[in-house]
Amino acid sequence: MAADIDPKDFDWSLWMGAKGTKTANHYDTDLFNFLYVVEGKKRTVIIPNDRRTDDMFKLQSFISGGALADVDILHEDYNLPEGAVDLIVNGGEGVVIPYRWWHSVENLEDTMAYGFRVTGN
Image (cartoon, rainbow, N blue to C red; front, side, top):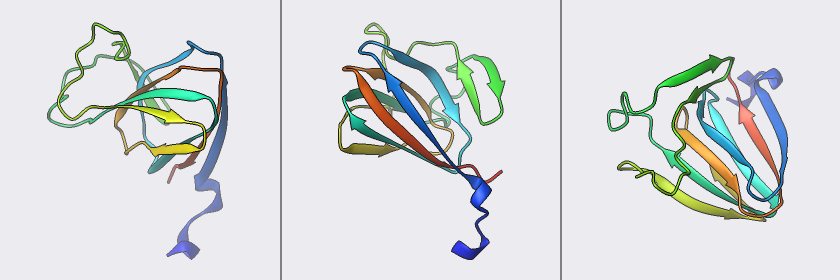
């Protein structure tokens, strides 16, 4: 029921990055996580966080709302595991990042995007 959702559980962020900048491999603990590219182009790699990837990534840190891993999944020599999704998100497009799935993003062009999240905290 929409009436039961606390407005404090909604969050959004604005992301601006130059061509070649990256977001390291991590997962978020948001109940819902949507990335929308306003302008530019992003490579987005998403990897399931399940039995296929158990013990694949060593955690570097865990902060409120997410965990950072120690592997560069965007590197050209990295072999993506079974179930991984490697996609390009162009301006005017978006992608839902499933709950606690590993992901990393690279700006292929100067890019402006926003994220919309439901935290459920």
